[in-house]
Length: 124
Image 1 (cartoon, rainbow, N blue to C red):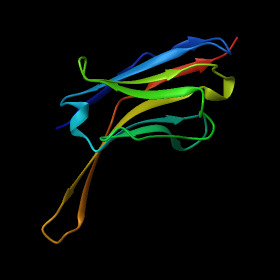
Image 2 (image 1 turned 135 degrees about the horizontal axis):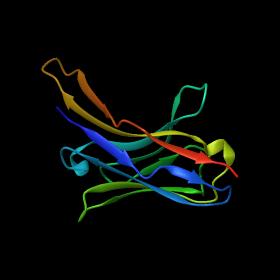
Image 3 (image 1 turned 90 degrees about the horizontal axis):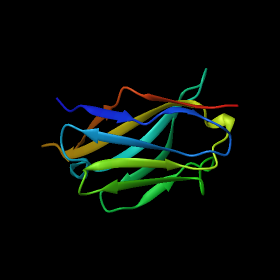
């Protein structure tokens, strides 16, 4: 039902910058949390940054100070601004949308939606 699409990946030199974009089939502001994950070659997918509906952001230590997650209301777009990129940042980056509802038994009903991934390669 819900579709998430990210873009903006590419090849960049170490120390360079890239900005990734993400949109969804409904407003990104409708989700409890929007996040960026990445999957490095041979590794499991990991969260690099998230932003809650109220605006609170979290970052993995590996990207703290270098990556910035943000939401833009006019364009209804999630961004990940990446600067000072390192070879170890090379990965497929995924946009993630998370929403929660309370069920009749007071259980938390969680829904997660993923983009198709966009590849970021940091290399000379």
